[in-house]
Amino acid sequence: MLLATACNKSEIANEENTEKKGFSFPVTVNVTREGDDATKATYNDGTKTLTFSSGDKLFVNGTHATVGKFAGTLDYVPATGKFSGTIYTQNEFSGTANELFTAASSCLATLLPDGYQTYGFLSVTSQGHYNAYMVRDGDKAFALTKAAAVEQFSFEQASAYSSGFALSPTCGILNFTINELEPNTDFNVSAVCSSYTPYLYNIIPGKVTSDASGTATFAVGIYLFQNISSGSLSLTIDGWNMPLNLSGDNSRTLTSGKIYNITRSGAKPAATVTTAPTATAGDIVTFSSTALVNAGEASGGTMMYKVTDSNSKPASTDGFSTTIPTAQTYNPGTYYVWYYVQADNGHVDSEIAGSVEVTVIPVTLAITSPVKGQVIGSDGKNYNVGSLPAGVTPVAMICYVSSSNGLALALADEGWMNWSTAVTTCAAHTPAFSNGTWKLPSQDEWKQMFKANGGDEGRYTGLNTTITTAGGTTLLENAYYWSSSEHNPGVLAHSVYINAEFVLAEWVYSTENGPDHVRACLAF
Image (tube, rainbow, N blue to C red; front, top):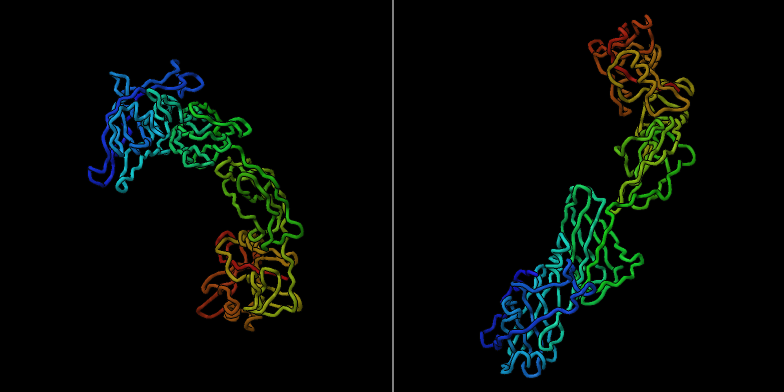
């Protein structure tokens, strides 16, 4: 087993003078391994054994009744098959290494494997006060293959000495095979242990790349100073926490000196709809804030919604939203609310489920004692200018009244279009009202509105003033506006010219396939 040099600090590390660093004591010791068999050895590649090689180091530290504390790092010498180096003692010692280690009240030897940031030294914090240190770095206990993990993480210790140190395994290796991943993709992974102790690193991170079949392999070394339950272990892949369940009941105990071959599917489960959305009870009125459906509930993600006007399942999840749709932007008619679950990091999206059919009905006009100059709100009621309640928007201005009936002009133009388009566009003006009709004004209706707002059916300024007061957009001067009255059906229709030079509303014929301006009118 070839291990890289593990001491990254001097063997005697402190800021004190040389006299306080301890007494050097040359040592050569024999080191063997306990349990080089299938049940104890960390790795089995056919030989069932691990061997020392150049570069291996042994950190030795302990306490002796007269010597005090001692520590040092020994190097493996292939020619002799032993570990040799210098031990530093707190007090001078004149005996042999065998006498020192045998009589020590505590004596620990640790093989220093590559992959753990390890070092050993005596630190003098004050005269006569010595401490021995060794540090392990769990961030480096990650390898891409089982063989590399064994080479790097065969962490072994001996806690007693008898004519040499007999090392026993202290590290366990989890060898992972994760399949059903996205092929040829990089993944950030971490082995996580939730039962952290000072002797166990709780997060071991690394990065792997899946092969063309979607399989990734890697291994981690876990320092098992204390045996742990497999139920405290999990694997995180790009933020998805995957319980390992090594024995199915999470009660299996992991022990040192063993390799645990773990194969798991990286395919995430699908998120599910636990409670399907249902249609909102009662009337769903066009352009109201009423929700089309009652919210659904999901497991493993977030409910998503989309509205269509046909009962055809959407081909993709484009256009879905977490917002529960309302009638705010929908004309009267039948609609279909589709839904699915957008997955969290531990799941994949659910399929787009069946739709919920809902019906949006028109607003009912509820005009009482109409007065010219009032506005009609989106709720179908008439209001004095500036007195609309919160949530209600003005949609038309009352321009002509005859008893409880009348005409209200939209507050803005529909655009510039030919006659037939003008007729259909005005009929589809929103919001739709159940007992009122949006339409392109006839020639007579235009004249009624001009006369009611200025006393002359041939002048437009009074109507424009009323529109401005109501917060609308005036009729454009030097522009032609369609009426629904035809002069020669299919060829010519009447239009009114807003003549700014003479301040007149003049009637002319316009070719129906040519464009004129359009203003919708609500008859009630």
